[in-house]
Image 1: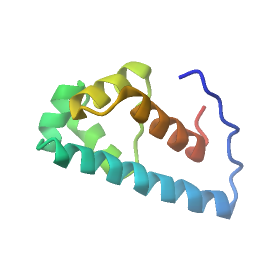
Image 2: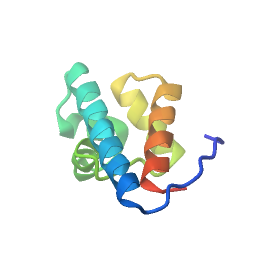
Image 3: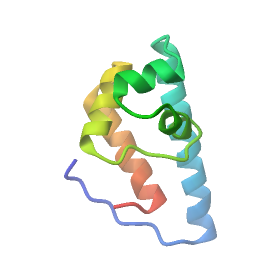
Image 4: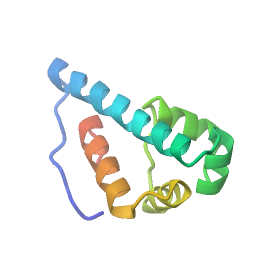
Length: 98
C-alpha cells in the first residue's frame, strides 16, 4: 500500500466527507460479511481480529491498521486484496490518517 494521499484539513465540509466515507466503509464491510454468510463473530475469527473491532468497522468507527489486517479481512470475506486495500486507503485519507 505504497500510495500516499494528501490529508484533508479539519473543515466542516471535510467532516461531512469523513462521515460519508465512514458510512460507505461500514456498509461495504457489512455487505461483504452478509454475502459471505458470516456472523460478526465468525468473520472476526476468520480475520483474526476482535469481534468488537469488526462491529466498530461495520459502523464506520474503525479501519484496519496494518497491511496484515487488511489482507486477513479481505481473505475472510473473499474480497480481492487490491479492492480492499483501495477502499481502506480512500477511507484513511478521508479520515486524515496517514
